[in-house]
Length: 107
Length: 107
Length: 107
Length: 107
Image (cartoon, rainbow over all chains, first blue to last red; front, side, top):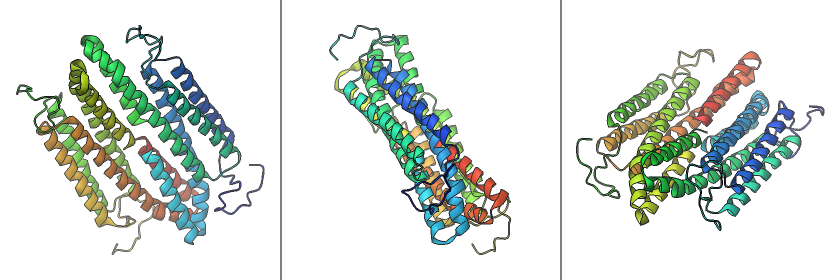
């Protein structure tokens, strides 16, 4: 991260800078974007449904892996900092993380 | 589907033409591709991790929904036709569908 | 299966007899029941949360595996027979199977 | 919890006492155990496969809900305390929580 991290932990609009390896995430998301384009080509070309489904499963796994990485970064930065600070902010961050985990588990 | 369906059910290379509503799938996949691009923007702009995760969950749900639609089309065409024909081909199609379902459930 | 299969495929109350290996399913479900009892012991004894979660994940995987086996049996018997018979019954069975698959993928 | 919590946070054998509402978890786990027994009855009685699968999906959701509750308790106690203490212990607890979350998401 080039810029100093001066934002408060609950400023949801501005830069957060807690992502451990932005270039790696961007590379993975570009690959996922390519998979979405590839799926359109497969549908257009009437590819075999099972082959399309295999690609969808691979893309879902890649997305989940991005989500788990981001969540780990989040626990290691926002949640850890809030827990160290304690009080209301810690409660709020943990509640928010639990809700995000529930959405991931159920999606 | 305008063109007649002359391919054999196990021709995995050629056109299959069993997809019920290609334009609808293509529209949904383009939206998913847009979500993948949106996620790259969120990472680049250091958006709040929880907000990124919410988008990932939405995108995963959209992908699952595409997969379930394709699987339903597949059961309604390839598996149904193979089951009606019977024999080895029916066994193979059902085995293949079960394996695809297992990948979806576990991904 | 000892008894002849004389029920109609849409009789949801009576015996169906399509389950390929009942003893195997019963053994797996008894093990799952034992896991549920084991989890109660872990909670009572204040075992470490992460260890409890590991057991819950193992139990969820075991349940999913039972579900995928039953679904494969279902495709191989009820859906295949209905598809061979054709018509309304085939439509209904496939619609029902797709709904069950969607519940599994989303649960 | 009546007894004082004198164990170190990484003692995985002894009492942890961080579970917010033991009676509630035990009640839910007993219900899940009952569902596992109910499934055995359904298989024994050759109940309709789709009805069995519906019960398996309900049981999987109940299990996931227990897991998400335990994980929330874990974040609110072990992870929060370790993060407040900082250092190696915080790193280890967060790494461990992330791994448990990954197992849940993928199971």
